[in-house]
Amino acid sequence: MTPHPATAETVSTLYDFDSFVGTSPIMQRLYAMLERAGPSDAPVLLTGPTGSGKELAALSLHRRSRRAAAPLLTLNCAALPHDMIESELFGYRRGAFTGAVSDHPGLLGRVAGGTLFLDEISEMPVVLQAKLLRALENGTYTPLGDTRERQADMRIIAASNREPTHAMHDGHLRPDLYYRLAGLHIALPSLKARGRGDIQRLAQFLLGKICRAHDKVTFATLTPAALDWLSQQSLPGNIRELENMLRHAVILQEADRIEVHHLSTFSAALADLTAPLTLAAAERQHIENAIQICDGNLTAAARRLDIDVSTLHRKRKSWDSDSSGVPGL
Image 1 (cartoon, one colour):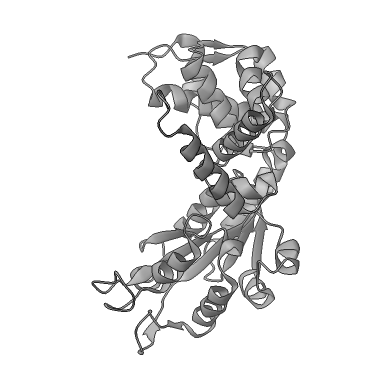
Image 2 (image 1 turned 30 degrees about the horizontal axis):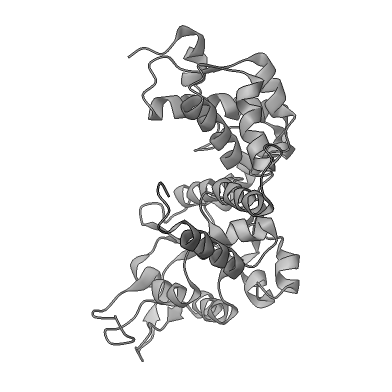
């Protein structure tokens, strides 16, 4: 299969730094910081909005470290119930709790000289943050149901989309853990802050990636007007929002030549600007759009909507109840 000649440049776009795409001055400064911080064994705190590339930054740091041959393990603290985070992180002995039918080493036991990436660290329960701080300071930890301390050989990289001073003020992040992590603090910029050139370069790169993933023989192209329109958008969901917008145009609208209206349709749905809906239907659409922007991360979606995550769970459960027994739902 040969891509359309007009899109050859898009398909051949190379990463500009590891898995990053972007050449703006603000990204060049980020790349330089990652280069310098990578070889150090010091903990790193990555901050920045959702979808700004914190996972890519963690991978870049690991690749440049003396631990690159060992594992890079990840725990998303926002993706697990609070009572599961402790067992996943510290491990447990058989019989430590109902369902613990065998020993489980946990991430601290499995990392084995590698790097542990703790995403959304401010979503970790504060009591567990204290246990993590002890493991960082002493290099030891105790699995659930055990009495014997274990040694932990690892580098910690943590990430949060909360601004650290706000997270500490609101009680989501222990100050002592923050100061232990933030010896190397790297802030990732929003996509909007990166400027027109990076937005357009990323759009073309992501479009080629989407077309390849869906086996499009003739690759889609973005018109100059569409590229200009994209560079003027706020894109609060950053790279994830941009990618979802392009995927929507390529797959659902089957567009080979992507015009402004193909993109603005998705944007309007996210902003809930169209269609007369009941108040309940409008609320549901707004919530589901926020969940989509956050790639299914309910904690991040709740924060974006400024509601408690338990409220979000309750609303979704009520929708399931309302749709039960209704044909087609």
